[in-house]
Amino acid sequence: MNATAPFTNDRYDEEPYGEAAGTELSRVHISRTFTGDLDGESAAELLIAKAEGGGGYIGHDRISGTLAGKSGTFVFQHTGLMGPDGVTNTGTIVPGTGTGELAGITGEGTMLADDAGNHTLTLDYVLG
Image (cartoon, rainbow, N blue to C red; front, side, top):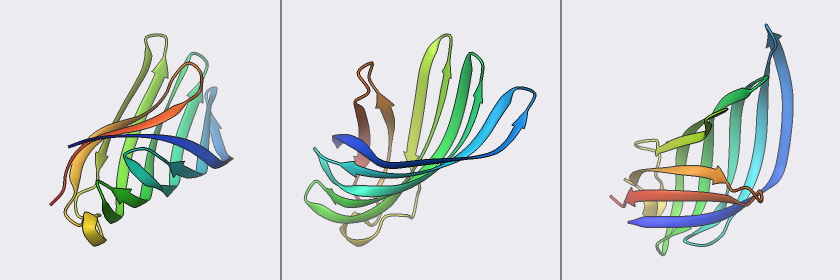
C-alpha cells in the first residue's frame, strides 16, 4: 500500500551540542501534524551535522494516528543528506514498533520538503 501525508512542523527546537572542524552538531526536538492518507501527529528527535556546503541528519519519529482506517503508532527512522548534488532521504518503519491496529506494520518511505517548503511523508507499507 502507498500513503502520502503532508505535514507541518508545529515545534522545532534545536540545541547545539558541539562543533568539530567547522561542522556544527545539534539535536532537534520536533512535533509534527500529518494530514492526508495518514491523519495524526508525531514527536521526533533528530541529530544534525551542518557544514559549509552540506549536512546530514538521522532521526526517529514516533507517529500516532490513523492510516488506511486503522489506528495505532509506529516509529519511522529516517536519514538525509544535503549537498551540492541535491538532497537524499530514506526511511524505514522500525520493525516491531507498530501498536494497536498498526501492529506488524512494515515499510519504507521518505520525508522531504519541496522548493516552497511544503513537507510530505510518503510510505510504501504492508499492514501485518
